[in-house]
Image 1: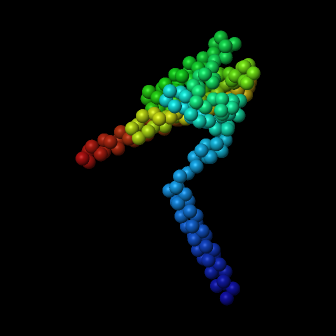
Image 2: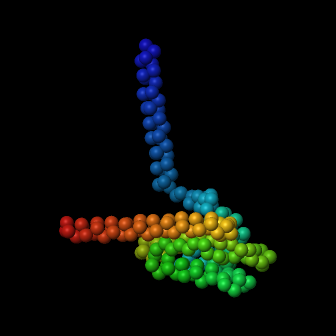
Length: 206
């Protein structure tokens, strides 16, 4: 008798779990069909993100980005990114504005992701002074239904401490970053070849 009860227990528990999971799926399906609050998700993300128009006007920014760049939302949204983040006039070799502009134009012109690593772009504080900062920048296009760039997602990573680390550590990080970049190119090339192969097969079948 005890054996029968023990045998029934797991089956009963499995049935309960199945019902709970089914109810949860139904609940989330209803939520997915309704309007999801992406703004709240955007704000909760721990990584710094900024959204740009194709003309490089700041459209939105999350809290992590404000913290990383020491800026205030109301003072930067609606303004050109290069007005908010100009080159440091005290750095004769500053090229952050030029390089970021080139990257963003690449995204708009070719509708592809473009990244920059180990880029110095000092941050202007509220008192007008500049603080040294080094970044990894990742820019991704958001296309509209016509296939044109509607928005640009600008993700930043502060690598200042890494850049200022001993030369041996910097060499290791640079090698890792180079390997990651090569792997990304391989994945992108493989995807391109897969699309071409599917197109070739479709034409052959036709």
